[in-house]
Length: 295
Length: 252
Image (cartoon, rainbow over all chains, first blue to last red; front, side, top):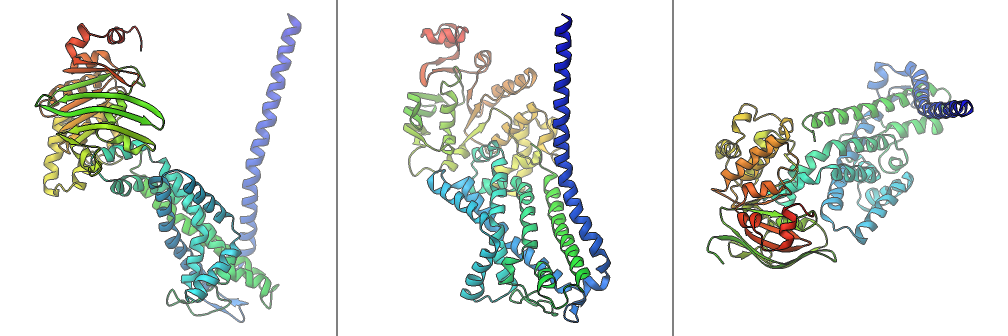
């Protein structure tokens, strides 16, 4: 009796010990991720904040880009990102509607889905070269906001399709049935009921795409980004500076790489801020849409 | 065929892929009567109900044989638009499924998309909610979300929403199975009231409910129509032993 009780206590202790070790490991991994993110942000902030000034964000670069500001690059990145969303979001949502609502599930659909996944795995420089060949040269858009937005739009397309598919599938089937049973057509059902209820989810997924569109360098290198231009773009056919490409230029191809370190960090800080800013807008819109959503 | 049959089913077989769910069903539904479809789970009664407004069209790989005549016209004829059929044959589902919109917009959703003019909408909302005996409870909160209503209120809202389309037939698929006894009683009273203007076909698992509210009862088993007769007859002296076994609780 006594020995079995002692064995029972030992077993309990062993189980608690195992639990403690496991929980510690899980906590540690979560903490590690936060630390890594915090470390990167702190590093950028610490080195970059000294470069930030009113002049830095409102003036074009001067003195072979060793002084002055980065306004053209900020605006360029905003234009390109918004352009990419304008291209990617409607196209992505339309594709997702076709895939989830209209298409008969079968071999063709599986093939299309494999294709979309492959598209997501294509290196971004390949998108850049495709953009150069197709939009810049073949369609004659030149190196411009239009070409860059289209290229980035295609780049984020798989992300948006994936997010939109999940969001559409998340709308309860009972909503579709209720609408159809009232003698409402399929398209009206999708447009009036399914899509409005899926939009918050679509936006959530698209936020990931926004970050990617704003941060990519390779796709815009050949299609939109200028090495240097002090003038601000006047139309979508103009070339622009862009933050990621500007950072790349300053850090690798400039004439005074060491001397411009603070500007480089400052530019990175601004890029992070711009991405967060655009995300924030999407989050606010999503919050507004979610107000009536409850099921 | 009696002159006041509104729907006639003639030798209908129905398949989910290779599985036959309904076998050689022929029956009629009388106008302004309540017909109950009863039987154990999987017997095909809900499948039959959803055939009447072509809701099974939404499921890939289904196939219908035979004819379903609504006011003399085969609703499965190739030139028939299912959207048109669903305007005339409304449906209430097992679980209340209001849209995440206001109470008012839940009612006006269907009529508005079907061309009812904006000036007629407020009157239609009141009329539909009164018919569904919900008006007094919600008349001051028409602009509030329908999701805030209780389950029983939501189901009556769904009935009002279906009535707003002014259908000829109302299909009800176990409309009280997700509701408490008080809400259930309200819906049953409502059905009594509604049959003066509408033809009601109701699927139910609840024997007492079928006995209480229906004029005709059809008993299904394994995809076959076993017995179809006046409710009183079915529940007092059914002709078939299977029916008797089922309603007395010996199986199912």
